[in-house]
Length: 285
Image 1: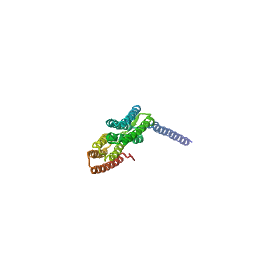
Image 2 (image 1 turned 180 degrees about the horizontal axis):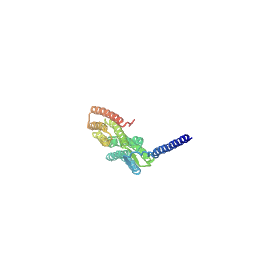
Image 3 (image 1 turned 90 degrees about the vertical axis):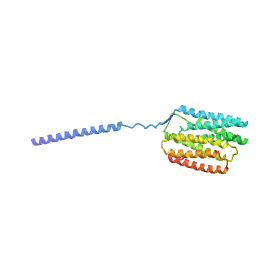
Image 4 (image 1 turned 45 degrees about the vertical axis):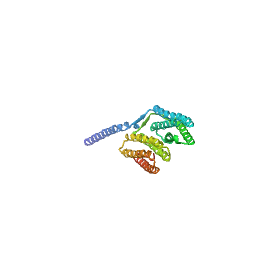
């Protein structure tokens, strides 16, 4: 009987030990798990390497679009009166305001309409400032009419379609990609009009037209200095080659030489497009 009581006491003691150990393990497990539920990761915020207030950007888009519209109205009146020098001045101003508008548009997420309207407006205005003295009256009027149509589309798009509800927050990479698209389309489209101007008998008209694109190439190369990768050095060299060939073309008089220069420029543009697509990873420019 005494042995049985002793056995019962031992079993009771062992049971109590197991019970205490179980409670201790449970408490430790809960303690370990508690921080896991408490440590919820905060939502990731976008990286703002480039910032622009919504109100400032809206003004930076509105001002040049209004200037383009008002100046094109003046151009219409000047073209009627054949004031060639004034036409050149005002057309150059329109080209410059389109460049300002595109520089501001680089902060936007969607560039398709800007690429469609502003690039064509800038290129058309630049061609007009260079060649208006040599244009027939009907061609002069139709060019100005084309600019009027483009300015209406630009104004309508900026006024009604662009909605900037919050301050701009972009990465340097995204900003650079936008600039690349704008510069490339301006240069590529412009060189198309240069090719159509090669037969012009005006001595310095071609040089005036090309000068605008040489300036755009310089600005493009400056933008590439901020690129996050050294790969853009390759693109900068291609742009330098393109600028050099355009400069040579602007001084040429022989039609055969001009033809060969244009072939070189087309190859350089193809190389430039391939390099930009490869480096940016974009599916299209």
